[in-house]
Length: 166
Image 1 (cartoon, rainbow, N blue to C red):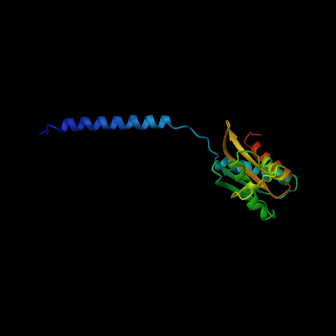
Image 2: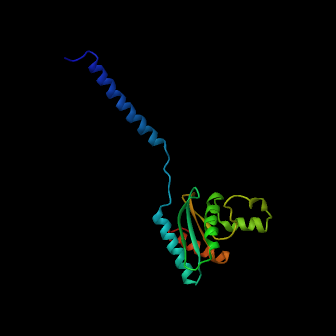
Image 3: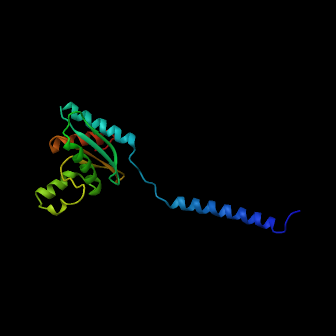
């Protein structure tokens, strides 16, 4: 025996499933696509940065962070200065947070007198931090420390070049 409302309940259930599917599909279509920095890409960057350092006889630390400044990868070459650990990470974070090369901030602080920036947490206005941008959007950054700023920057640029970036 079929209850009188069973068929109607079944049809309402089907309609509900269809409406939920359409709602989920519509919501997914409204979400933007976001490029992300992968661990594999971070590894390639670190290897390239370290190769540049080794080629020149330099000892460096390399940090790669995502677009939120979260550490994805960190390497410290054997015998690199211990202080380079903190500085490399902070350079990478600074490049993400300020969306530019840390060299520009170094000049702003040293030549422009913007010392009010110095108390910012994780701020490191020293050359050697570079943002990683895809289609104009920052997806992460690389920070290198251990040598003079221009040498750190050369290693960071080698890391970007490993991804086909300048």
